[in-house]
Length: 80
Image 1 (spheres, rainbow, N blue to C red):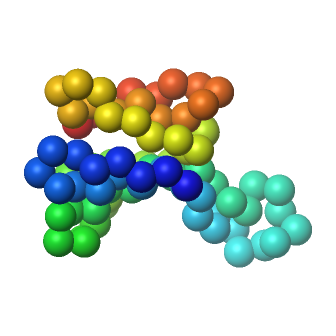
Image 2: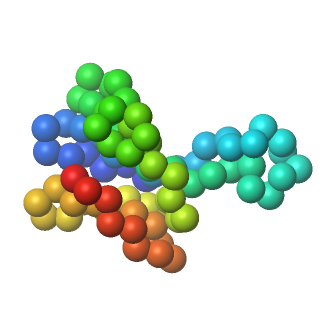
């Protein structure tokens, strides 16, 4: 899991969530990036109600200007 704080206090978190509920399923854990407002609520303007499923969500970094770089084996650009 990785965390970045955007200007204005929004939190961007990269990690995994359960996707199938079946622990024998190799795809049970899906990498995701979510953004919370400074008040702790999902930021509904980001992705699907505050989160985005990605290919590789192990790390998140802020770019100058507020952009995000997510992942280690694949770079995914998400709008600020």
